[in-house]
Image (cartoon, rainbow, N blue to C red; front, top):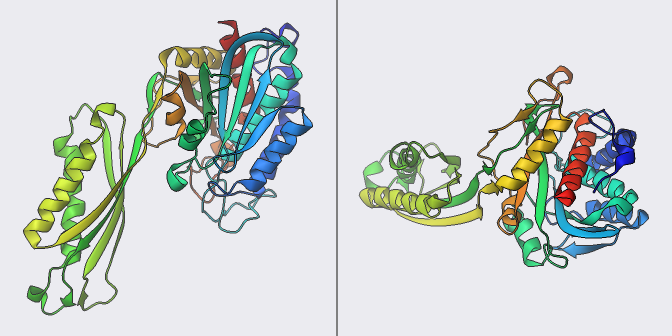
Length: 402
């Protein structure tokens, strides 16, 4: 696709610069009415109303609240999908801004409102220029990226959103407060980690705190488990491979002088290498079983493989990198080896078709916009919104011209 009339020496073309105030307004409207995973009805209605207003055909109700819009160019060509997530988090917002959350206990604390607004801006621009489009763009508005009931990407893939027409490539972005505004993090191979969860209950024998020999102290056993789990990465994993085992929750007992009958721990596992699939689950259970046996306790363990690693196709990553180098102008520019142990169910799309997921820097410390993701004061520099649209449009142009 070549839109010669829109070419400009500016990194962001004038027509997208002019769209920036509207994109900000969409983002702030979405921010005020955040919804949890698979409950994004207001958000889906907002998206659908805009698509209908612009004459873009779309289907809703996919995986509960997901939407797929299709923009066909006037000439045949490949099919590129652009994915944006829509859900918020169970966090009480602490920001005192005019657009703060109006839903008690729910907040867009990860930037998904921005992702949806960027996708809407992209849809609007492409619809206005579809006569120059040699191919098709499929916009996927996905629910429940934050992991509710296994996440929204997997059921959307199962529903056939990558088919009819069949998608040849897919891209997506994450606004990223770990990078400054005006930078892009992109790499081929693993970008984000596989995510696994474990819930374990240690069953001991309760009793009086002054008579411990008559009990099996579940807190002592669980404490040994928490400590020993750290040795899996330190002593069982190849030091050249990355991995994390984190216990994030430990609950047991209610009184000073009562030895708890049971103790519950919850945690997460992260890794990049697919060869480690099953490794952590096996070692965690072996560790728990061995410690429980030595103390005379028993256990129950629920282990969930939530998301696989988010792995970028090399060709698609090269395409995004080449585009980013034409858009970002700060000295930091493109960060080539940006990685995180955070997880993303974009991974399910990337398992099906060649694609690239990348980070768009959105932090601005000078304005206090550098709180981390999932923080109750999280916010981002909205200048990144038009930059995201520009990158998506340029990626579309290059993908169609290949």
